Amino acid sequence: MANTYTLISSNTLSTSAASVTFSSIPATFTDLVLRISARNDRAVTNGTLRLTINANSSSIYSFTFLQGNGSAASSNRSPAITHLTDIPLLGSSATNNTFSSIEIYIPSYTASQKKPVSVFGVNETNATAIEMKVNAGLIDSTAAVSSIELTNVSTFQFISESSFFLYGIKNS
Amino acid sequence: MTDTPTKVIVNCLTGEQTIVPLTAEEIAQREADAVAFAEIKAAEEAAAQAKAAAKASAEAKLAALGLTADEIAAL
Image (cartoon, rainbow over the protein chains, first blue to last red):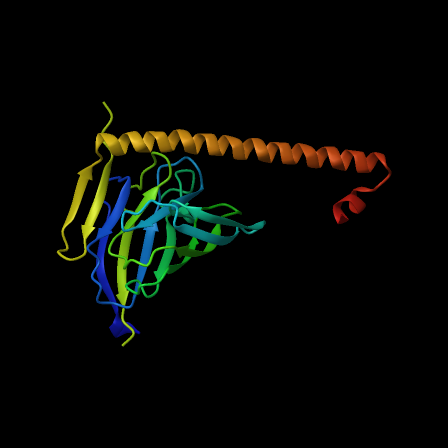
């Protein structure tokens, strides 16, 4: 795998930002992988990150997630909404200097077919309960993914030192 | 004076990374999103409180019928 797992672009925030967008994603890979270490300024421990593709905020995103926090487990389904969400994102109530660890996988991102997305994310804090979540998403769009935007709910912002890495994987 | 929120754009083709202030339209949209988000959270909290109250009421009624705490918990 190593010689086909290529860093396309990355960004580590030097100041807070409302969103991070990877634009002009090359169509030369088979799959995309986003690795994220992030946190925002919302006054909660377990918040959520949002993802849209191709600047498309139509109701084309659906997902089912499972989550647990060490004492309780739950699941939920959201059909046809304007973004992929319920992706774990630490807020400002978590222990200082901790960040969420998130992987988002988009296979066959250039294929003319609907786009499945898998998400695995964990939060971190010095407490007995903290959230981890897996999320199976589907984007009802056959367009190749050429941009990915990561945003916060409401007016919250990613904090400085949040980092975002976009990798491409080839099948040969 | 509050700093204007920004967005970061990473151009994967050129490697260029830009920090762009949000437009007035984008800021207005975020503020509208914030209002909608607050309404959703308030509704979720109200629903959770109503559910907890209904559960407590049901448990009290079952206890009044003679069920033990273990029997209620087993339901």
